[in-house]
Image (cartoon, rainbow over all chains, first blue to last red):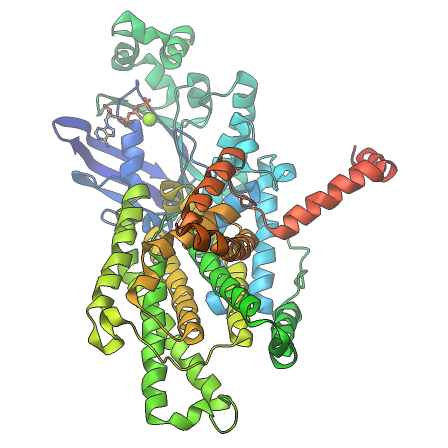
Length: 278
Length: 360
Ligand SMILES: Nc1ncnc2c1ncn2[C@@H]1O[C@H](COP(=O)(O)OP(=O)(O)OP(=O)(O)O)[C@@H](O)[C@H]1O
Ligand SMILES: [Mg+2]
């Protein structure tokens, strides 16, 4: 392995839905330990990129390497075991299960943790019970990072919206993956919650060495924590660079502002508008 | 990560955790040996059917309640297990009539071994059928899956109708009387034990994750395909065993025994008890079996099958008032806990406020 292994290498990634090219020739190199952003107007193809990375969609063309291993053609659950996990734009928690169970389900699948067959679970062998209890302790600890440990016995659906988004991140981390794909983690959060979330994302990066690719419309968050940003517009990557470069890029500004006026009501457009463009 | 405070498991392990179940089985056999003879045969038959139905309901709950795959073909699996095991024992007994212990006053240890072997075989073949039916569940959801599984039950019925080796439409008679109270309830306890333990382990959480959100489960690394097939295979196994017990108790099978009404009955038990509640399924199975018998005189007087009308009415009333069934996804132990909690809050106000104060 090289000194700084690439968490994610994407080349020529294309997704065709009938006549619509939702993503064309997308490319990205995400080194381990970095936080990158993926932005673009509504319908630009951001979520589609995530869906291809996680095996939900089969790309029409292109190659994806996760931690140096090709993943195209694998099923979603197999890709997750290669060390990549995601959250969903429209929250998809296990609603009628407890907060703890939500995280436990992921941790059970972590390939680096011990697994037990049916019989040891049936007869509660010492080792099986021990491992189960240890997983519970680890899950509580993980929930603690997100400030959710005091609610671990509550139903996931009973959490406030912001906490549900945070639980989704915790659940993705519990898979043992070191590469996280976050699809609009701050959507629907108030500024205070967003700030808290930014701090948490920074924390999991530094404390657990997570690599993160995030989609976000909240420009304050994106510009604040992403080291580099890719911009998609109509499925095409129109820019890539540091937050500064992106803010000053005329094509990006055009993509967000140079459209029909009603586009300016999207949070993205307004925040770029108010944020310094220089 | 930090070191863990755990050095030894906090919960009971191995044999330590098993004794309750072993004791339950022991009680069942004590009943079998010392008390069964004194029970009125009519009431005894209700008890036996309750045990068999509880086994069926709990095993269907694994598929419908815990994994969220709406199957309506449980009678089909029961049929497969029933016929396979009945055929096995009939053939063996025909060859070695001594097994039935006519001189000794009943089947002895050989009979027991034969029954257990035949039940196991019936369960295995049923689970093979479960595997085949589980395959469409990978592509179908909700109503579509229900229809396919319903169709499966009918296919099995039609196949049996045309199988001369098991009597075809005439039915299969003179099945050796090998089932007794002890076996029915040992199997019932074993089924509850197995499903209880599985549901409360990593394996069970996988089932639940598929029910809750298949896409999210898959994204978290759960092999949802394998989980669904496994649920069908396991559910079918226990249904097959229950079918075997049924065959060796009633001693007569015909294809009509396992028509879709039978499947409905089991589905109703699961829905009534609460999808995802094991004890709910057991309760509902007892309730409906008793109710069915209680309604029998009514049916004889009116010469109409009022049972289904009353079933349906009950379901409608229940679903209007308690859409999640009697127990929802809770177990009796949870209900007991919250009941105690309520009592404590009501009558032990001092204690309650103390605790609240301590928490804050
Ligand atoms: N399964 C699908 N079949 C057909 N078209 C699809 C499918 N999934 C996405 N699309 C289309 O692809 C385009 C990109 O959608 P995508 O969800 O990736 O956008 P996005 O950048 O995530 O937008 P948003 O910011 O609104 O979440 C849209 O035009 C969408 O309608
Ligand atoms: Mg999206």
